[in-house]
Image (cartoon, rainbow, N blue to C red; front, side):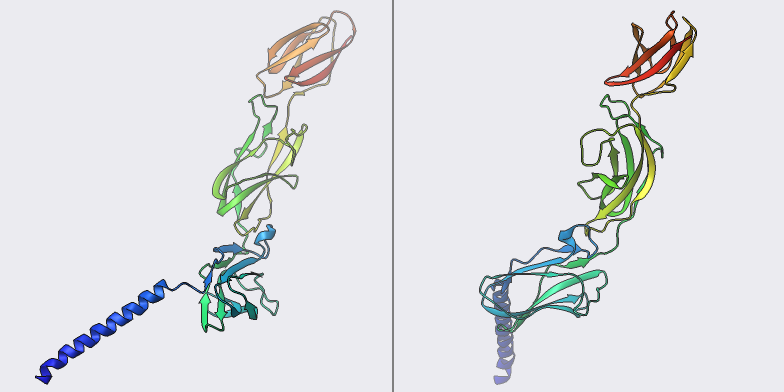
Length: 313
């Protein structure tokens, strides 16, 4: 009889142990963590162009009065740098720290994933903060793919060649940057691997259009960590509103003459010694005044005007 009861006793004991273990597990699940309000995952670089991303920001609250140690560990669990030792904190106190990726010996750690670790000395617990800290010191690589290396635009708002479009590709999601003579003129809001930059012919930091001339265009990229690539020259852009092939013409009285006009507008206006008209862009064919003298020929497109001296002799 006793032999028959033994298996039943063992089964009951196993069931009781299982139930106790389940209860302990559920209690652990319901127990609040002694640390809360931790920072989000982040990526930073000591070489960042963004001051806020030159260091990692570590933040958390401790629920109870504690004495804490805080350090940084690598992906293998090895202690890399110590941030706090035997620091006393009050209940719910906010602890804020920064880490610059250098050890106490002044040696920079390699790129990779790291975590902040908090030791609660009074509670005899060690907690790894859940948010990863990533170090990325490699700048992105960007390539411009313009349709031409010698664009000509006339940013006068008439809808004709007002902008120059620059398709680009980046090795990783990043902000694309257009620089004009070394100064930033375009900075994309989004971080993409492909996109198109627009050069509108505006002065850096201004809404006014640049004067006629040639300008070196450079492209660069800045990644999430703030690493910025070295600018690469990809085009020499020309701003041209209205250009005359000659500024002085010599012609006989009443004779015909031609003048080449370079503009993006489909038509130009002209005025010479009281006569005026409108002609298609390109080469203007006009007749000189009948009397000898020096006259001024005015050629206009919108608000832009160019002048040519017409010498009748």
